Length: 140
Image 1: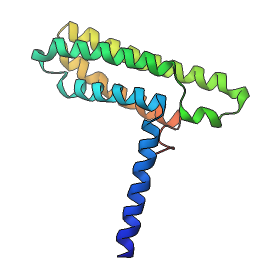
Image 2 (image 1 turned 180 degrees about the horizontal axis):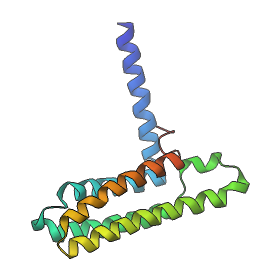
Image 3 (image 1 turned 135 degrees about the vertical axis):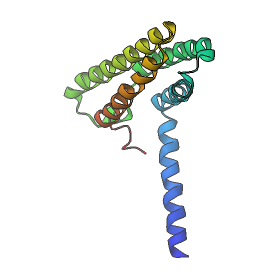
Image 4 (image 1 turned 180 degrees about the vertical axis):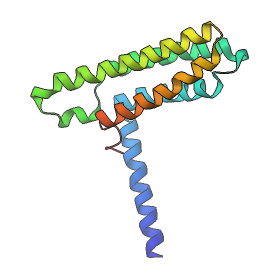
């Protein structure tokens, strides 16, 4: 019984941390981005979804632009002298992600759906690097 209580308490605390991060401005913006990118990844190779996928790209690009205006929650832990470089690196990586989605958009428009799907592997690497560099998972 004690183990069950400990497990439930840990899960509750874990969910609260995830929820707290999602409530940050960047967390909210990333939530919309994640929803659209997951749907795009799922259906990117479906030629019947071409128009839908291009609309998802528009939404994803808008989310990325919104995210670039915000700061990772870890920024408050960065020394003031290092903050400009930290934020510049964050924006640079967000620009790299946007370029990957531009590549996907170009491939979709050219009906090269396998090429579009292949870019998602690069995006996975970008996500991992970004979360590591900006401690996105530390607050969860």
